[in-house]
Picture (cartoon, each protein chain N blue to C red):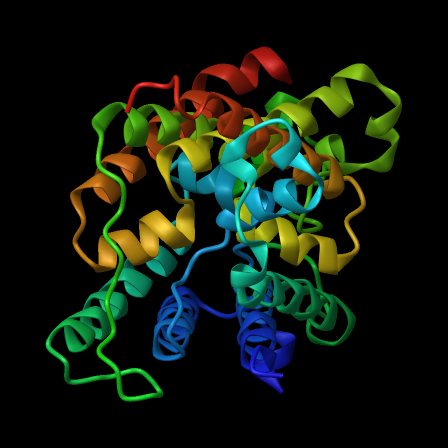
Length: 137
Length: 185
């Protein structure tokens, strides 16, 4: 049951994304149309708080629950990988109005058609896996 | 109970998401969702086709449990915490969407024009959902993260690859909404 805590954190995350309307297709659309501050406020304030937490981790002021230092794994480098991959992700994010977290929240809401988006995302991840060695980074 | 009846403003949601990030790291893991897409592939037998998927999925059980939690969180919200599904949209947004053929914008979380089950009966309807998913799945794995992994965790830890990825997220999103939407809808 050591994973129970992740179930609870997931539930909390699902509720936050639901109550803040971040999982609404319209909130993503208006963000890309620059017609509302909501999503920018959510993302910017999350990052602002996140910077503080991660600095506290890096300086060893906050340790993990077992007293070990917390390390943030560096992301894979490569301009093509991050920019092209990111742009393709952005196309899907805007069209579906959902990124991976909200896809699962919307399944919880009972939105049936989101399963097609999830299926597509799995196929997309599968295609990436097949091509991963051949793609430029 | 305004906490339940009203949507939460950005200054509640953003710090709350950062707190989720904090908890994940505090418990020795990382904050991110999209790697689970690969784990699903592994569980579906993708290892038969590529060694890329021959991973020890059991070491990622915690993340699968996190995703199950997200689904339950969505279920609890829609059952008990969302008395109204209306989204208070900018009138301009409603107008722009009406011009694209979206009626009643903001009445529910999701537009019926894309997410109605009737759309499963048309090639275009299914195509939109499937292609959106394909882009999300392929893009996030190629880029190495999604909104949680790159935008929140990556930018919070001041990583340059995440900044490039997020610029990419917006490049793709803006291209879709400003140039492709009028062609699709």
